[in-house]
Image (cartoon, rainbow, N blue to C red; front, side, top):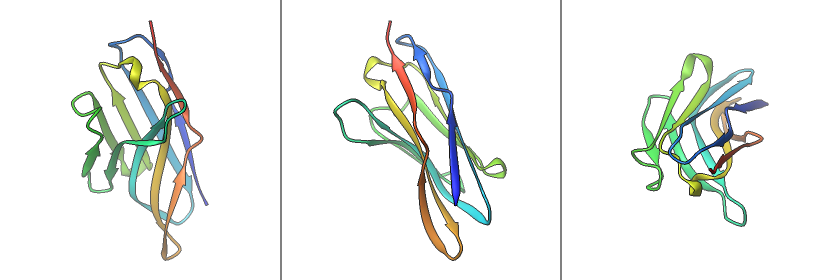
Length: 119
């Protein structure tokens, strides 16, 4: 089993910044990809950004140029730096990890952290 623990959400004014963190813990696993998804009220969960273990990134068009995803493989931790936040960025942000473990590929989700952009 792998656990994902997120931190860093909160209330921020439009134009402000936040940094989210997500640490993976468990035994006998290696990270393939980690990333962030978000879900706003009455909307489907959507991809925000992902990063592979070798640093290849993928971003939603809506956050390109404003958000940056990074990974510390040694610490099994992924970060999301969010700049120039907009009210439409308000959502619950979920960490996701795809890992290799026991000869198979597994996917795990964090519990979610609320990000609210409002004046």
